[in-house]
Amino acid sequence: QVQVVESGGGVVQPGGSLRLSCAASGLNFTNYFNWVRQAPGKGLEWVAVISYDGSHKYYADSVKGRFLISRDNSMNTLYLQLNYLRAEDTAVYYCARERDAFDIWGQGTMVTVSS
Amino acid sequence: QAGLTQPPSVSEDLRQTATLTCTGNNNNVGNQGAAWLQQHQGHPPKLLSYRTNTRPSGISERFSASRSGNTASLTITGLQPEDEADYYCSSWDTSLSAWVFGGGTELTVL
Image 1 (cartoon, rainbow over the protein chains, first blue to last red):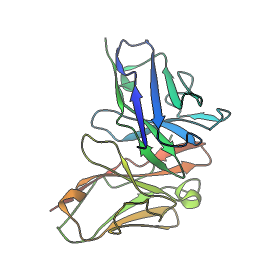
Image 2: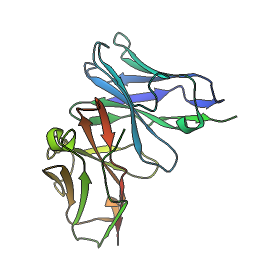
Image 3: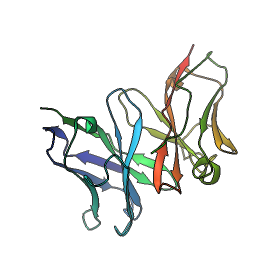
């Protein structure tokens, strides 16, 4: 069964950190992978992308310098390190495989930034 | 990063045809095309089309996409109640080196 499963979300105080994980199974992990988030009641916002070998990484301006995307191909796992979190980072974070477009999505993991 | 422009809402009658639009510029939709995603409340998005007009396996032929210049369109024929959802377009922006999304269109089937 082809799937990606996100984990690691939770409640964190402003200025805090979290690490999200995305475990892929049933698919070839040799693709670009992305993180996309969705604030409560809002639309989709792209966060970051990483190439297969990790040599190319791009970030949305809103998270540049605070978030770090990485991957472990031996574990078929994608990561997103979230630092210096702000209230506006509160959202469901989705992991999405990229093959010309975002063709496989996980169920998402909720990150809430609140004091 | 500037996003793509979609109308916030579209309403159309059951069994009729709805056309959703998505406007970008020469750095994204105009040269990269657009993909369309459907999202039902409480669920992750689902890919409906990519490379402007290619449907993934399992997607109904009632969904078809096209592009004219910097505007992409998604046409849904024979509207069904289950088509009520939010629809998003996306495209890679070569100038920003970033993916951009539209703000989403809420489709209501009357």
